[in-house]
Amino acid sequence: MMAPMTPPPRRATRLITAVAGLAMLVGGCSWRVETPPIPSRTPTPAVVLRDAAAEREQAVLDAAGSTELGALEAALAPERLEALGGVYVEYPSASSSPSPDASAAPDLETLVPQVVADSVAAALEASDDDPGLAAMLRSIALSHAMADVAASPYSDSPAEHQLPGTDRGGEWLPDSGTEVDRDVIARLALAHDQAAFAYEVAAARASEEERADALTRARIHAARAEALVALPGVEDLREPLYDVAPVDTASETGRAAMEVSIELALSEAYAALIDGAADADVTWILDAAFDAFAAAAALPGFDASSVQALPGLTTS
Image (cartoon, rainbow, N blue to C red; front, side, top):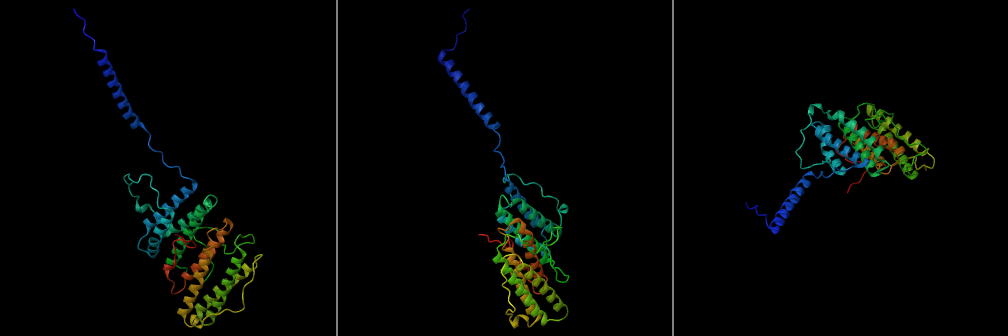
């Protein structure tokens, strides 16, 4: 009986080569399937703080309703979000997660003071690694506080008010170790002294509650001016008299408009110190900026559109 014929060597070689090629092809497919996904980004501490700030802004937007505070925040939060770079989404093409239960989220009036406190705390964390982010977070905190008081002005008699959302005592003045330039402090003292004089003139032409409120605010400004020029190295630029146009004090409407203008100018002057402020100076700068704005918000004729998304900062 004849033995089966073996394939010619060349044919066997071709068969082995084909099988080997198929193995490589299958093996290649298997390797690609098992390749681990591209690793997620590893954010720096500053990026974590920035992302958290953006999420807070989105939460404020989500909570904004038809109230006056809601309308203000709905107009301001998008600008803050843009400055922060928006909310980070790791997989933008993935299907969105179910929306959280709206009933479980805090109302805007509760949320905003918490955002103020969280922003101030985050700014302190960021101050060493990213001073620019720290300044932005402090400005954001001030903006939220301004929106809050613009929607619900203080109804009590004039008094010094601190930035809301914290449980500390208010600080409206620097100590002797402040890092703010002494020339800047001298000009702030002059502005407070001018404000005190203007309020005294307004009080002289007012009556009853308006007169009492104007005198109270005049005393607050005079005390601030006195304390600021008492700091070491601060030149006293105050003068005995200042020019107050009669038209500004002729009517209650005119007096209120003048006082609003004075307080907003002071608030802006303090807010301008946020960028570059030392950690030790931040508290009194924010309190002073907020206090002046709160005083303006409590006056007749105040316009809530004066609330800025990023007070004290210039954005390109």
